Length: 329
Image (cartoon, rainbow, N blue to C red; front, side, top):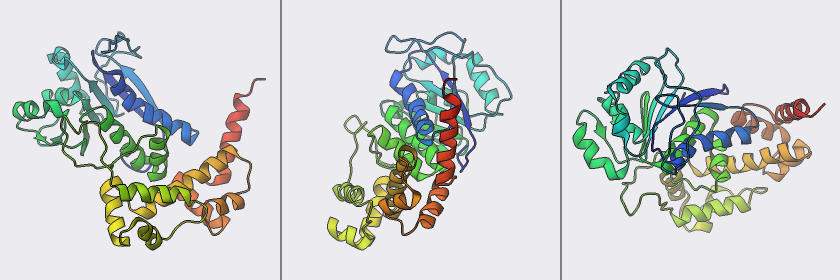
């Protein structure tokens, strides 16, 4: 699951009663956004509940289901979503099902209070895991065999855990980054006007900081300069001078703040701008290359393919075929 791939990834979501709508959306919407931006179905999800019935949420909106959760030999990732009253769902039967499913699933993720369910099923023993900041102390005391940490999300082998709704968005962006690359993950985050602090943030969560984003203003200024200079990119030294730091220090700030060096972020901005032009205009690839700071159409095509696993012409042909096939006859 967490490796570069152009294959579609299917994911099962086991949604427990009294889960927040925003938590469900935090898993699904980044994946939907990735599909929309890529113009192809990179991700597909299936909604499951313990008994197959629509599950009530804390917003009093029932989530329809595509089936009941059953123990099978399927190897698709399983995400367990829970917010409140998770103990009511932690029956011996469900814990046994989770334990049996984990033998086959490539990934098992505990989303917010879903972490408790995985711990109850002994699926986190000897591993690091995170949980909502309100529950951290109780969780650490209840499961000493689990290395409880205060990260936004944790990936430890085949187990993923998150500490809340927005950290779940962080996790899903990390999944997209590892599978499709930094450019698509960045574009998905920008689709939601969501400024992500880091793919591997390590700040401590508290009542005061939960859900907030603390950005270094110099990184923010540098990103704005990048966005203003897409056609004629600024070299790192000049960018750093404009921000008022050394080039080395700016590299460190970017790594600490967004988990990527300046040149990677800058290239992603340019390629995403180029991709929109490929999809939304009929401009020549040479013109698009010039408009996004590439020295030649061939250099642009190489970077484009390395980032999106297809050439600009293949993108246009694929989307043209999709439009033709969906046109009424």
